[in-house]
Length: 326
Image 1 (cartoon, rainbow, N blue to C red):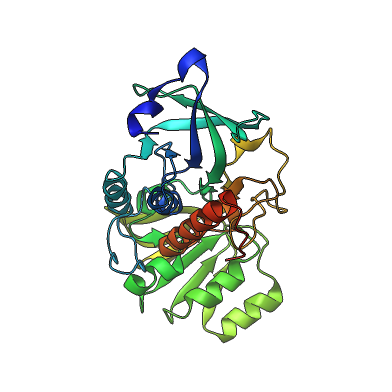
Image 2 (image 1 turned 135 degrees about the vertical axis):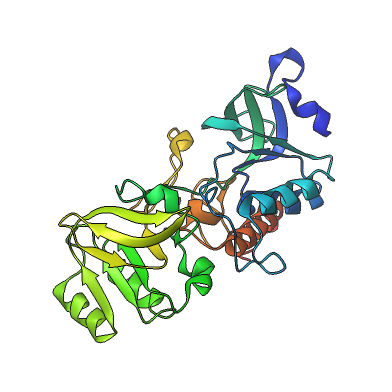
């Protein structure tokens, strides 16, 4: 099937059919699409265009692309996919539902779409579906946090701590793993203050352990952050206290973006993430997952891209009946 055939419905009003639909156009989804394309599969990538890392100015740790803006990385991936006529990308398009069907022709899934662009069909039939939607995130309720997020306050230590090393840093969060995150971030600085924003999530034992490592804990609620032009300079507490910092990290709460799978009886973990094996297979034959959609937390972009490539290879092996654990 050529790229031009994806723009509507087939004869008789039936939905167009492809080998694989990839839901999500981040590193995992684009990497999977590239590898599926090279295996001569017909592929549609559906991308809502709302990446979680849109606020991040630079991505790091991706070999040959260290320091490239995440949006530029996506642009480069799209340019590579454009060379393959068997791949179509639907921008600013949402998947509203994925349904299993018994079509008799191997098209196990019907995927409903919602988009405003020209030529976007209302539904596409597919032999396989790869979910690469990533995560939604909720930040602590601090008024100015978004003004600094992605510029001087980050969520990923592996991605951004190098640029903040040896500075006085803040770690802000309300999740039970905050002390563990603090021990990790302390690798890059000897001046770290943990802010629980009034949440009772650091035990007295953890606080003592952190203090022994030179990390202080502030349990008071945060009034706001101070700074200018994206550069944070202090954390202001509700009681008037003020702690000067020169950067920091925040621990968001992450949620899987999988509402479109409400009609699929697929195994999930306790937090609602898709339960997939290391090859990306879920409990539903033909349904795969890669990247953050199959992980309890965000991963580096290069890891997500690798998972997309692996899931694509497994999908092709499964399609031709060659079972592999990869």
